[in-house]
Image (tube, rainbow, N blue to C red):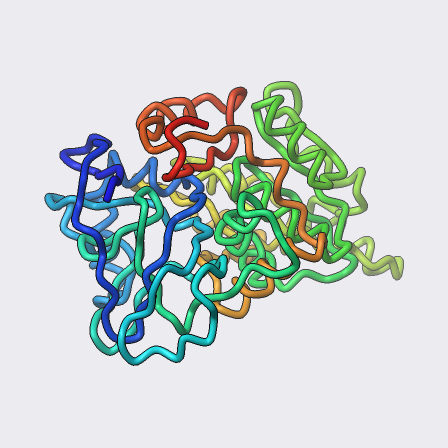
Length: 365
């Protein structure tokens, strides 16, 4: 089959062996697959990602446990079509059914992360294998291109769940790339707000507004952290104590860090009001430094989040299908396999693209 292979830190369109489904596995045809920011990182920093995974004690089931020197087919944000079943499967869904899946193989025969494995191809190829028990049919006639957005928007839902939001909280999303936008969509699907969205990119701020952000901030023009008092959030401990003495209930600030570059976490800590909760969603691949005493003085809560649960993945798929989670506006481009390498370059310009979908069976899109 044809696939885009990651080889020597380059993306190469090549022919690879067709995958064969083992015990509990299903062979599917990749219909559409999003290019994730993690793929952009992995292409350049795969060694570092593997090293960090080892330090994290994930074990063999963890992400990024592949051999960087071997061929890898990326792609974990996919919608696919069932082609055939392997042994020891229930075959509960008919061949031809469109499906989404948590991108993991967790069967008795093998374990691995789909798209981040030397053994299990991702969606940048014509075919891939799924674990039958993790597979979900696409509901309500949801278009393939929207179903393929389930995975990144599940990340946003998981981050919001970890924040344990309250109806009177005030939310700030720093960074409006696809994951920041997914966080905004998850917040607004619950009717939560106000939501402040900050990004240097005008295009990303427009998308944030489309997905429901209530306040847009260009950090080049003003600090997003100057908005707290306008939104009813006391910035200092003294202001909070005064509000409590006067019987005024202060609104809790919740910040989502969706940038993932060195220095941003320290900036959030300094800009956060006392008692704020910071949810770190952005993946920083470099060593970073923070001043714990700042967080201690402000009694900040820092939560680091990763991925999602199978239940959150299913909730996201059905939320998109029901129109409760607005996802499709983030798609800004489509390519065939021959266009994947260029798409990786194009995604470096936030004014041009937010999310590009790969269609392996289209020569050009």
